Amino acid sequence: MCGILVYTHGFRDVASSLRPFIQRRGPDYYGVKNLDNLTAESSVLSLRSPITPQPMVSGNNILCYNGQLYNNSYMDTLKVMETLSTTDDSSSRAKAEAIENLFSFEGEFAFVYIENNIIYFARDQLGRRSLLYKQNEDGIIISSVGEPGFVECLAFGVFYTYDMCTNILETHSASKSVYPPVSTTLDLEPSSEPIYVDNVLNTLKEAVSRRLVLPAPNTDVAVLFSGGLDCTLLAALIDDLLPPTSRIYLLNVAFENRRTNTMYDTPDRILARRSYEELMNRRMKLDGNSESNQRFVLTEIDVPYEQACAAKDQVVQLMYPNASVMDLSIALAFYFAAMPQDSSENPRIIFSGLGADELYAGYSRHTSMRNSELAEELQLDFSRLPHRNLGRDDRVISDQARDVRYPFLDKDFVNLALETPLCLKSDGVDTKIALRKVALLMNLPLVSTEKKRAIQFGARSAKMDPGSGRLKGKDGLN
Image: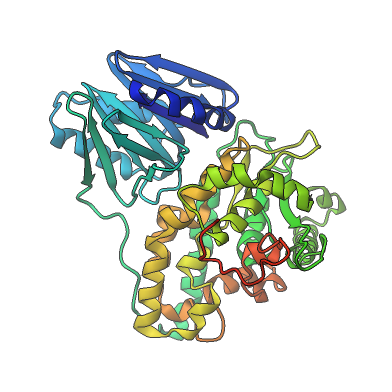
């Protein structure tokens, strides 16, 4: 995880206000490269040795890169630099082909690349890393975080070019589509269902395995843990794949809610304790060793009302351009879940279950939809992940110097999910049918029956203030 801040010198004052946010994203290294009318800055969160200093410079070319690649060499930044710069053809077509090649890599990333007075910048196909920009007569500024006036970069193969000589910004689309449309297939043969479910399990396991790129064999990791179906599946798969000397921290957050006059025994806290017990029991059954109870660490994070209020302004800036009541309640939950605790054990790598609901019809509204209507809704849910969820979550979690990874948004898993028949998503009563069947295969019978509960309600980060009960999630912030 790194921070990106690139700007022409008309935006020096704006860059100064954003720099502390960029620095917090990557506390292990901070680099600056100055050109005549451009400055490129990068912070680095080191997740493997040795640290790769950024911005990376190759000849006259400069790269600021934030992310992880999973199907190439582990020298991610070098691989990206080579992909973008190793061409004898400097035409715009050749550069577009190089960027399109980069989009084909499986990984979670954003980049800014400077060559011959042209700035190229983009997020990965699904926009799993944040990148925003602002352009006016003063030039341009591109950053991992923003403030009013900034625009979030589009995803799904969109990249941008900015000509420093003419102050012209252009938007481009890659010619190839990585993802198929949501399948409208309604049913499948009963004999085929076990094959589909096995395929879902194996593909998800491979997605988790790819993301267990760790600094050392005994590295601990964490999971954003409500106790629900998606995060518990991830915790179990990580348990199966992680070396036995590593621990898995289950991060569960609960808020003091003054409106409901409740403390920390929230719905998600109660569920997390039950799912934690199921995970420990599963591990003991698998290896017959009572010491398996040391594998999982349920980390109960209690947030007093005053502490939540004190963090509000910073969280509002981090989540921008997202600016609704619902965005704030979700962002507060993730902000405190990722916050380092008093313990010296604070894993830098956090796994998120985001994407499962959008791909496998996990929301209650999906149960009222059938056939083509459900397929259309799922297509909409999938298409708005980059600007509705992913940019916001990256900005909020990364402010705590954490690297968040999304196995449910792995390219292979997404392709499989989009092509899965609708009968394995929702039948009008249950949601995420395929994932519930996977949970049964993994000896998680209790969690396989859990219904979806949004984090802001499960952790009670929504409507905490007295008198806020009539607010709606889509309402804007005052």
